[in-house]
Length: 179
Image (cartoon, rainbow, N blue to C red; front, side):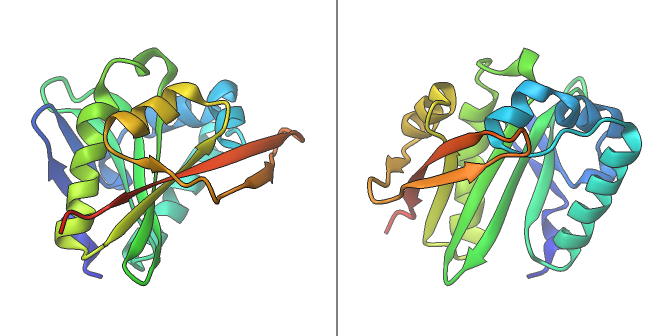
């Protein structure tokens, strides 16, 4: 996959940018948020150095074509809102994941961004099915997925043991490319 073609993706109100052009302090604020980390089961970055290492890993994976990860930026103000990625590419399927800074959740950002990223996956990467995995109790994320057309996969039942030493029940949604 030629990832450089996706370094900047312009949407009506937002711009998706590879992490080397996104403010590291914004990514740190997101990854330092313990509530967001607990909701996703990931570790928390406790300093900017850890965030810089994360950004470096994500850029390397993007360059290798393992995934595409973008910072979500406001086109007019250049404000950082969160991250979105496509990953787990397998036989015309992929997974989408996203995190939004707490103060910008439920502001409609992902209602614009998520369908556009899905369209990019279907039209430019020849993905036929897109998955999204979220916490069973993460009702705002589940409502968002349903609102933009994802369907619950009732056969998927997984649990994740998180960095916070808790069990997180997961659900999976899927969205198929239009034929």
